[in-house]
Each structure stands twice: as C-alpha cells, then as structure tokens.
Image (cartoon, helix red, strand yellow):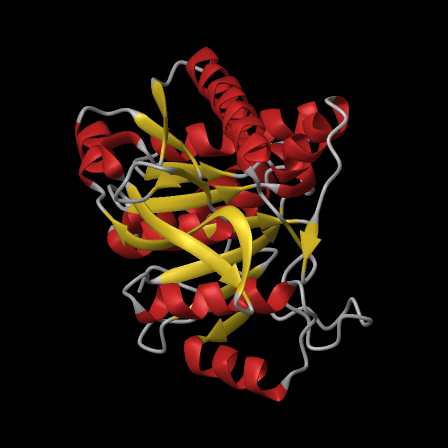
Length: 298
C-alpha cells in the first residue's frame, strides 16, 4: 500500500514527540508569555493552543504573562506624560492603577481563551495568596515608583490550583508587607515562580529566535548551552543588552533547581511545541550540566 508521504511525515513527528511526553509527564512547565505574540490575535490563539496541548499530554503548565505594550497604549490613551529614570519608566500611583487594571484585563482574556478550548483556567495576580512578596525596586539608587523587586514566593495557591486540575494564569503584580501593590517585571516573576516550584522547564517567549554568538549573523543561533557555557558567554560580554538580563534570569533559574530553560521566538507559530517535542528544537535551551543534550529517551 502506498501511503501519502505527508501522512507518514505526520506519524514520524508524533513518534518523535513520544519520549518527551513520557519524560515530562506530570512535570511543571512555566511559560512566560509576552512580546509581539501577545499583540497578534492569530499568534495568541496558537500560543494558547500549544499550552492547552501541553496540559492534555500530561504536563502541568503555568502561564506568567506580561503586558507592557498594552499598558503603554492605555497610558497614552489617557494622556499621561511618561517619566523615565535611567531609561526605565517611573511607575507613579496613577500609572500603577492603570497597569494593574490592564494586566488583569489581559489575564482574564487569556483565561477565556483557555476555557474555550475545554481546559479550566484560573487567572490570579501575585497578590493572590501573597504569591509574590515584594519590596520597592530602585534604579542605581533612584526611586522609580511602584516597581517591585521579588523577595519571596509563596507558591501554595499555585499548587492548590494544579492539584484541582486548573491551569494557572498569573499576572505580575505583587505586594509588600503593607499590602501596597507593585508592578513586577514579568521575566523576573516567571523566573521566581519557576525557581520556587522547582519547575522542570521554564520557557520565555520573546521577540528574538534565541541566543546568537553574533547577533548580526542569523546563522549563529546557539541551540543549547550548559549553565557554565551561559555564564562564560555573559562574562565575555558578547551579548546584546536586551538579552543580557534574560540570559541571567535563565542562569539563576538553573542554579535554583529548574532543569531546562528555553528562549523562543513567540512570533513563530507553535514555537512551544516545536521546541519541546522535537529533538533539536528551534530556540536556545539552557540546561544544567548534568542534563543530557538533545534528549532521545535513553
């Protein structure tokens, strides 16, 4: 019998995914969702499809999302004049109010998209259950307003949701001991949550394909780095400023017990599935030196 080659290719793809499904069954994966993938409705739908598929194949996914571009849009809409210190936006009381409103709006829209695919999601912020305990963050000693630096994570509420088979979707708003609200960098929030839960995987959806040896050379994408190689790469200073804090977050997460961290281009449709369920993937994976490179189920 002559089968259509396309059908056979689809079967091969499914078989390639099998060892990953077996290995990561019932394991926690934290997905930091942000960047341009949040602005394009078609991309947003595909990201949510990926996360739902991960859950249906046995993973325990957690989404931590940003919303910086949406916040900026609403600040402009109300005619507020942004202020900056050392290149960072100052989050005054009015800006914080808008940020919290917008982030909760984004949060519930993602919850609805997951629910529409037949999976029960629950949207929370870092204030719920005192999940993200913060203190005020300063930039080179200067006050930048209600921007939070995470000091402690209490993941009990996340464990409770996972135990009841809900998919947690978290927006990065925390509070201090006086219950004052703070806007938290979404990368920092995802990293802190993954560390606290000893997640098997942490995936950053970004606007770049991954880490390049030479950013100007698109053929120099690094598919995999051990944490030691990543440290050397940071020390060499051969990395663009925007990627530096992200890569440092990856290193911190690995050092705190996360097994693998992935940096992916969220603009590529189904990037999560391509990175997690194929042998080589499409982004950059940072792994503990004890981890096997390109897992093949052995």
